[in-house]
Length: 202
Length: 240
Image 1: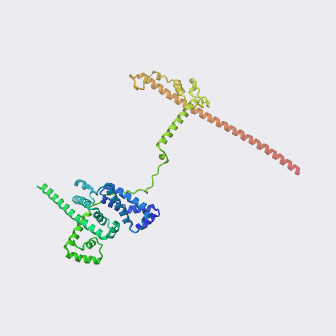
Image 2: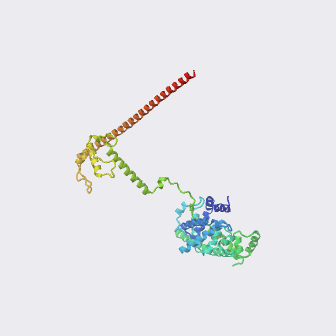
């Protein structure tokens, strides 16, 4: 597979196909980052398009000191930050109201996954979204880049332009907050299920 | 909070070198806080995996080739409408001119000749007089025996439906219309056959002219050949 550096060099020389290959390779992770940062599909799509447009226009200024993906992540995060500042909005958790097991039965990801497992996964996803949306932006970004994009502490520090120890502090604090919230939510969910089960059996 | 927090994170995310890992593991054996953190964070990391991202079609299309649009689709609608209007006007004017010049232009005989002579219209008339047109139409209808229109119940513009329908008048109107269409078709065939005759005559005339030219050329060739023969004979006699 052609490396990002080679594709970037060809794209900088005017090869549109090379840039299209970079887009194909990185569109999905960039969309995931924008979606998890903003919590909105439509806005995430706009950010992805804008990010690639900016990258294309700024290719000549990209000197290759960082990885192309890190540069792209940084553009995306800046665009997300601009959007939230402009709209004065915090990230939201797009969680569907209620969970209908009958609907979920049609959405089973794998034939081996039972409807109960699917319900539990959806509930957990909603809980994670809510907990992440409540985190301070720095902690949320650090967790997202580490957990969902697999960046090293050093790469995150370079991307966010902060010391390595700061990244670790943000991550540690964020994970600690998430731990408490998720444990509390899971305890509440278990309590509700128990009450529901007792109500139906009595 | 333990002072080994950062190293615990390295251990959790597999970023610690092997030597450091062993050292951290030894620390975890004796530090309840760090051991608890590692176990809890592993559960959190597992929970975080539940947050998926919806499937999304590609949003990047700037380099997609522009769709090929046929040339006629690139012409604006107003230009198409204008062209259609011009064609209609030209066609109508041509048809009208042919109808008016039928007898005066190239001597085309039509059924019109049987009826009253049409009003004379100058060929280079700058504009068509609507009165002349309606007069010609009336003459055409009259020549075809289309008189039932006078008998039909008049229909006003403000009241398009007559108060009472006369079925006999309707039938007569239909019969007259059929007769008019039949006569019109017959006239068209006569016109076509006349045009074909004219064209055939012209071609015959041209063929005859070509034949006469060829005959004339052949005669000249004969004369020249006789002259050459005469010259050759004279030359031979001189040689002898």
